[in-house]
Image (cartoon, rainbow, N blue to C red):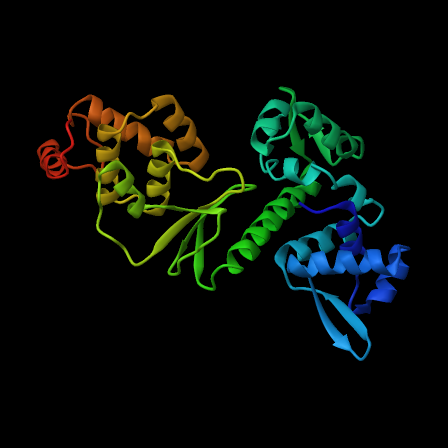
Length: 307
């Protein structure tokens, strides 16, 4: 998320300084410091302006920077740049609640040994402790560390989407991925179209909407039906969308285990269980916002879906 050098620069920068002054404070070369400043400016964490031949730098008003500054001021004896470099911030992102090393490894997409190696220095300093059931947890005094990691990821996501469009809403996000709503078309390989328009891939043409939806991921370029179903419920969990998802579940060969796993990620697992219960009982067990069975049969016939 941030390198040791970037974290050290943010911890060293106070008020407005020139690149030369920051380089002196870091005890690094002017060229190295200039590269750091360029990366931090691109990330929206510092702002620069020309003053004659020199470049003035100052911290931006980004929320994660405010949180990081608070941490460094309250605990100035701690070398945060060393402690939070590497994969540590990725792991801390998921420490908003106590988690085992295995859970943290799976969520942060790192090896379990990386989790232990990242958290050992924090544990040694009393920032992190292990519970009776071997879960890692942040001590109360340092709970802002997870908030900082999450705000930093959110800030990075905003910077990423703002490079493509000015008007947007992030509907869901994780450490490396997010679901965004926008009025503009995004033509970028890391942004995969999702939402109502993508139902046409399964011969289920839905009414077009003015808003567009994209899933940002640097590792996923195609969406499964399971993921599309979860995205729809994040976008809108109303009665109409639930009916559309029922059509998809009835029409496509869905892997139930995969869908349930995806649903947990997107926090729509309860809705997915209600949909399956509805279909498995032919509508006899019908939760709120689900249609009468006869109405769903008519909708399915309209779209040529066998139920």
